[in-house]
Image (cartoon, rainbow, N blue to C red):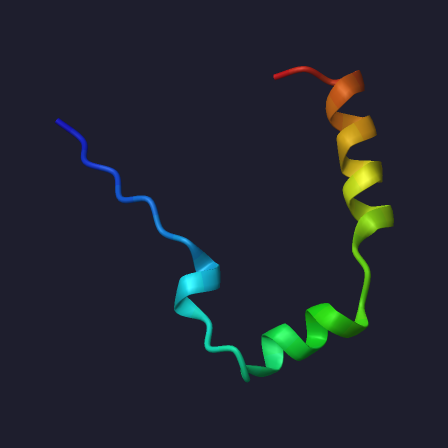
Length: 44
């Protein structure tokens, strides 16, 4: 039997953490779109 726990990174990362500052500066929209296109061409 396997057990899984769902976590939310937004709840684990404090509001003033450098990670949040990084996300506010950089946009990953292009990378996300590229990965989605690759996934559409190569189904699992």
